[in-house]
Image 1 (cartoon, rainbow, N blue to C red):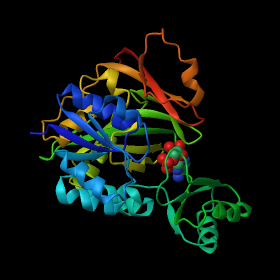
Image 2 (image 1 turned 60 degrees about the vertical axis):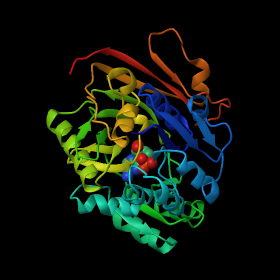
Image 3 (image 1 turned 180 degrees about the vertical axis):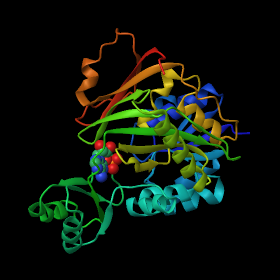
Image 4 (image 1 turned 90 degrees about the horizontal axis):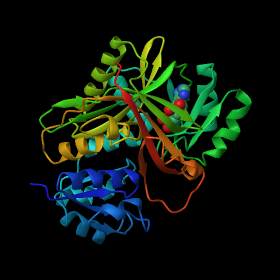
Length: 349
Ligand code: AMP
């Protein structure tokens, strides 16, 4: 029986996972290098130590029954140490696959799924050749450690390649051809250790400056595409023998669905489930990693989730009937996710 879950990372996702665990009578211990993480208000214990502090990692692993994580950039060495002591879910194959954009794209292609055209870039020569081959606008992205549009540069003309390449400071990268999408959607999918899969309804995402701004359900999608999106997500989870919740981001194009990226964790575009489903993505993740049956993620309402980014939080209307979720972050910074709200309305589709 799981009594205590260890969570790597103490940001808002770790915080909301901790709240969900508490609802199911389970405590959490947080491991986070930075002081005063958002999750500390709601966790039973916080380990403040670096990801290469072997002693602290061992103490943490020995204090919990299962370990999970709120972000995918966990060093392989850290995982190795933890896994020897306590199971880590989702397992490391999911991390290894999603930590590197080139590895991830090749994995998706092997499954027969469409991804943006891409080429590995290790030199300016590679970049110029790839840009010329694509013959269209493209985005240069670091292979690792990118999030919320960080580590990305858009290139629209050959004269821009050198500056773009220099801006990445020699980090291994890929060039991605620009996908002419109609809309962006994501599927939040869960799988338990028996292979049972449950997906929440696809949500439609709007990004601003590379950061998620809002997610709306139902997405504006044909039933056929909705089914395609769910089946595709399930295939990814099955292929990784995945246990937990995953976010699968997709571009909807005239030619069908193109996978943008996968995140082996609860996902910002799944926050609407907190107010529009009986079982939300956080509880679903806790259920999956604790060996519980998956819950029923059926949606009872339409919903729009809006992120409160930077100063947005200062202008929040606390009296307009939305479900408010604040992360307890003291310092407001541009681009920093401070909270979100969910507006729900009667279910129409
Ligand atoms: P990512 O961090 O790769 O998810 O990128 C963040 C956002 O940038 C995406 O959600 C899209 O809005 C946009 N974007 C990233 N890659 C592409 C692409 N190849 N084509 C068009 N838009 C993209």
